[in-house]
Length: 191
Image 1 (cartoon, rainbow, N blue to C red):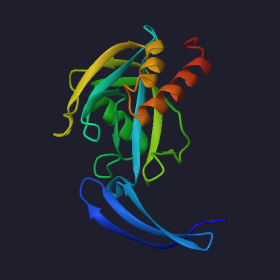
Image 2 (spheres, rainbow, N blue to C red; image 1 turned 180 degrees about the horizontal axis):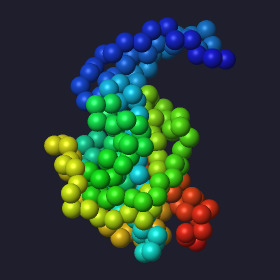
Image 3 (cartoon, helix red, strand yellow; image 1 turned 45 degrees about the vertical axis):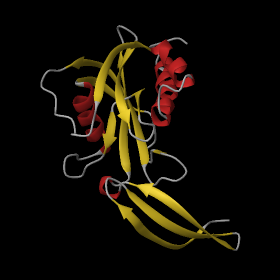
Image 4 (cartoon, rainbow, N blue to C red; image 1 turned 60 degrees about the vertical axis):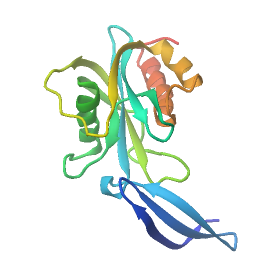
């Protein structure tokens, strides 16, 4: 049983769009409000920056307006076709801008399709593991609305506890598990 799209239109547009989507499922019509960032091709990058020598990560502590709080998370941002040539380019630029870091090794943690942000979103998250980076002084400026503190040298064993305690939003929580699994698979850590 496939849903049949009856209608879709933008009902709000600013930083993101809200779409009113009407679908027909099992002979009944339903309406849903869907969010997305059409100017970013509905794509964002999220990066797990890992220091292999120290077995630590670099996180950002960033303002989350939905919860009106500061939470820990991984550097990331939206694809911008005016600035980026690919989602990998987006990941490298966001790591530079938000964490002031440049990595030597890059590994995708999701397929090219990415992971759907949530049930009511058109956005897809593309997650990457960045290994053996270095802090840089000539980083790109952050966006005006970004209130970020860089949190360096967080031990990887701390991350699952912070997820459990609600100190990270869902996208970063997902990246914790993907990143730790890849690091275990590569022999960089034991859990």
